Length: 233
Image (cartoon, rainbow, N blue to C red):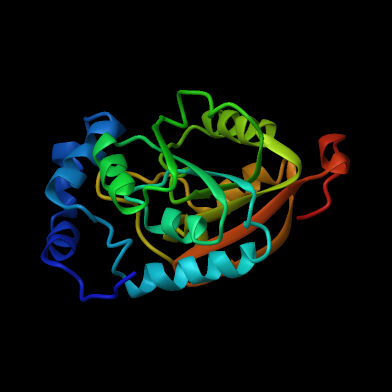
């Protein structure tokens, strides 16, 4: 993964956020992403940003020893930057995203992964059980907690025995007092704190990491929690 300076697209996107909020806010989420990927193959600088590289390093440290030879589902793979890391460990990776244009770029960069277009909020997950499910910066694109709980339940149901879910989400100032403002069109509407709380209704955190702009949590199912006993606060 090469490290480069911030490109013109990223500077323009940051400067144009107030206008984009008005122009794109009425579009379905899928088409918002298609517009962004039409303008740039890497609109969030996942392949080039030092901040994203640090976050991926953090996530891989937490997942160390859990990936080789395992079935891994990546929810919201974007253009494949983190997919490449997962595949590089010897994991058998299935990666899904809402954007066809992002998936085309991901396939060209990471041919050893299996890719599928999927709206995680509206559709079921791929068939089969996974030892690891990864979801980074995708679950915040809703303000409907019931909808988020439905996604959570489908993810928990897709876990093999002893499986884990890795959440990596942006921290929003409205929830954490630090981190980043909401995305241009009003997304994401939920930040790391509230997403983590929803998952902890059915899971427990086994390891985590936190920076100024993001939180990473590794969670596993617990029979005690499923029976109604909360182990983590």
